[in-house]
Length: 103
Image 1: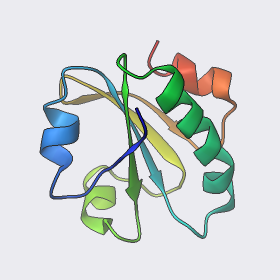
Image 2: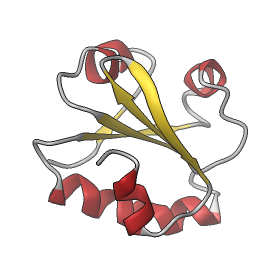
Image 3: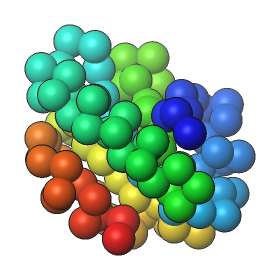
Image 4: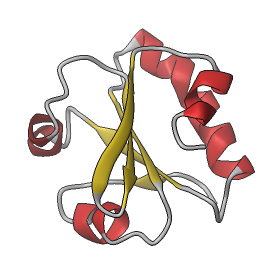
């Protein structure tokens, strides 16, 4: 399962109502570390399909969502379970560290 583009319009359905954990990557096109994390997040989406959902929020296009979750640095990855944030990673981290966020 590929990443889902998360917007203000689909956030409730895709993230809060998800029956599996959701890893949400807050990113921007101009952000170097975001471009480094992006391929890792894509790998995780493929390898853990069915176990977790992976969503991406472009902070330039979805500023209200970034503000709602207090995103001040990117990339920021949040893990949601049952509609609640249960873990987070701010900044670049290797794949092993990102997988630990939801395992």
